[in-house]
Length: 193
Image 1: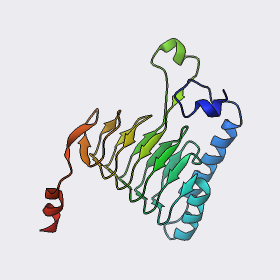
Image 2: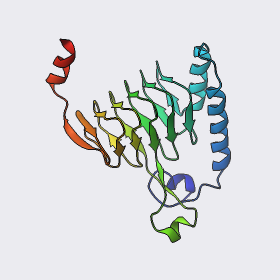
Image 3: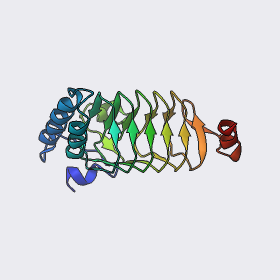
Image 4: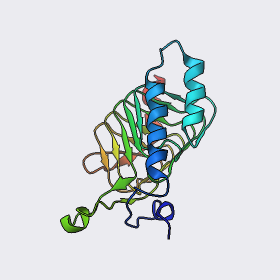
């Protein structure tokens, strides 16, 4: 099995062959240039994002600075917004749906390392895909770990560390993140007054 095949299924691998170091460097070069754009260069930023990401839907916006491992493993839907200091460790695929909002200082990390120190000393790592479904809002400082799916419409509270998948239509928060309550009609009524 190739390293690239191992990168999305949780198998241990080292990422120093098969052109991966060069691909990471290219991604970091693209994001470096993106981060140096001026606020008035909106069209240039849009072009750069489309070149950097695996795919980017309509009306996508990421406020610099941005950090990525590759960039090409990130797939973003329509009407996406991320505030500054988004970090995406996209060794595995990161899929983000439509109408997703991400607050400042959020990290999406698909990669991890073994707990056993002898295995960890070999330099091996594992990766699992992250999925953020439609209409999700991630509060500031949220960290999403490898293999997590966050269900549609859900809200993740500020400072949460999401270690397990979160279902649709809930508010979840904490370290580790857990479901607090469902999203209900009362949430709409609060802001309609």
